[in-house]
Length: 186
Image (tube, rainbow, N blue to C red; front, side):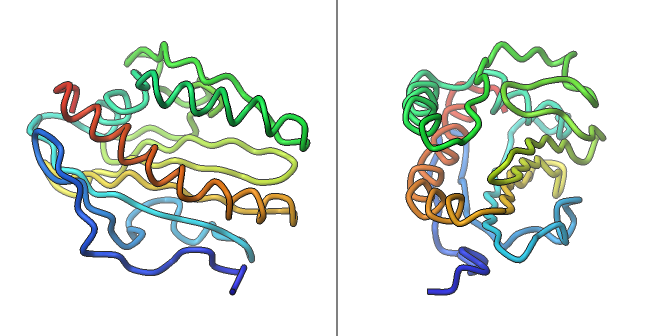
């Protein structure tokens, strides 16, 4: 198994129905500012969603998904933290009391720091000993957005960790997006 690219395979047929529309796993968008930041060992994925809120920009979609993280997602992250702190991984705050007006460069959003905010894209990141993590919400069209994750792995421990956590990440990512759609936040 190649560890250099843990997942760059294009997946076009995985669709997940939310109340308002589809969540589709897509090729990592070339339009995101994360494109090209990949290190030798990395993982990346991206999900496209359709929003019925045509006047929303990337900041509103970021807030709709990450401002109100569902309880099961919070429990999963607390469980992850309880185990991973013993292996030297950072265990950041997953506080989800994010306000829309606080989504600006330099502000904290849970364990992430908002790095850039435009109408087209919001990027947040976290840098730690084992890996660097970024999340991007990119506006693709008036109603389509891509929610992407990029993880650059710095150590063997991070590569093992990602192999274990990847299926949970995929479930959690789709669940958080679907939760935001079904609760009409996006």
